[in-house]
Figure 1 (tube, rainbow, N blue to C red):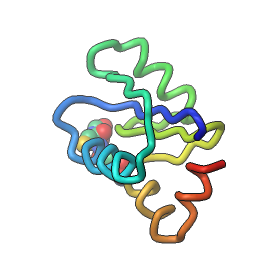
Figure 2 (figure 1 turned 90 degrees about the vertical axis):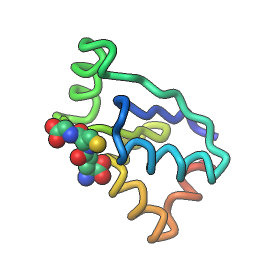
Figure 3 (figure 1 turned 90 degrees about the horizontal axis):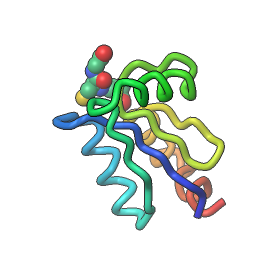
Length: 85
Ligand SMILES: N[C@@H](CCC(=O)N[C@@H](CS)C(=O)NCC(=O)O)C(=O)O
């Protein structure tokens, strides 16, 4: 499975939904809490080309985007191939 990174904050419903979907898929991921460390928010924005909202999700080299984009991939049947790449 590719490395998966989820940039998140506490009390973020979109983060919770995204993490639940990944967990349902049995995908392990690193969670980076950007509310606790401002420099990591800057890293998140740089890696995501200016993405300001959380979550920002990376699967391998692919910047998925946020929760909505993750669920869109799932609806399109594109998430499983990405997770097993
Ligand atoms: N469409 C985005 C929405 C994400 C979103 O609105 N996240 C909230 C936290 S739950 C956020 O980052 N708000 C801060 C802001 O909008 O600057 C997604 O699906 O991830």
